[in-house]
Length: 409
Image (cartoon, rainbow, N blue to C red; front, side, top):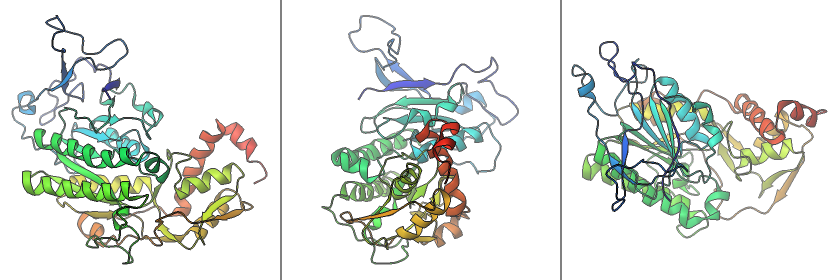
């Protein structure tokens, strides 16, 4: 697909882009790239975008030397302590309009970074980041990572990929292409511009684990030809590519293995168990439990995950790191928490289990505690009501109608 500039931050104040206080540098526009006019256009210069906003020329790298703006500052790409006050880095977030990506974007923008979101909106939603429209330090480009793109950034958070069974089973070939070709493109970009690269991998690389809880040294038990393999094996290959670029090109990389995550902005009907249960309870539908309900998962709130990703990016360790909440729940226990939160009278309906569904999943986060100083803070019973509020508003349209629809609970 051709790239489409969905939103570019508006012009900054007249002084933006000039050196501020000593040691500070700001840029009025976070994305540093230009577009060359198509060959044979018959014009020496051409407007880079058509009236529809679609890219009309070829993306061309445009290098910027921060030292030229502030010669006294030593610039180190991709390495800034979390708590350091500064004008910010240029950060690319692929999949930044998605559930996790949009929350990460919120944190990065709040920290003072200039953020570029690249998302094809297959599972992402423009509404997740619209509150940043009007911010000169935010830009969104509708683009598929399976196609190369040239940007100048300091850090790349690579989140782009369908992450729910409904989405990746709908188009398995597209899913594995995103994991492999998309990751290859982002690694190539990071190599060319010297950016630090963070891959968001998944606990699915452990498959149906024979080791419990799972530590990062466990190689997993994955069915390479199953219905979930497009995602599981795609992420395993993405990890391989990431480490090969690190060893072969000396690229600065980080790998996070993300366990089940929940919170506001999840897709309402994406097939994941927490979103399923919450949506069903709000709609007065039975909670669908597959199998006997004794399968276990660990659920972390999205803000805990974002904190872990940022600590990993800014730290000195490559990983992989398990990022998840070690609190373990059976599916029936999760259903009980949802009932207690939304509707104690919600019924449970059992159905035949899905193919290749892991029986147990729980992270060992010792490594993240010791090397990143990270562990989740928000318990399921504290985080779930925040997600319910978001789902209620999106399902019923507004808080008043939601309150009317849920009277008597």
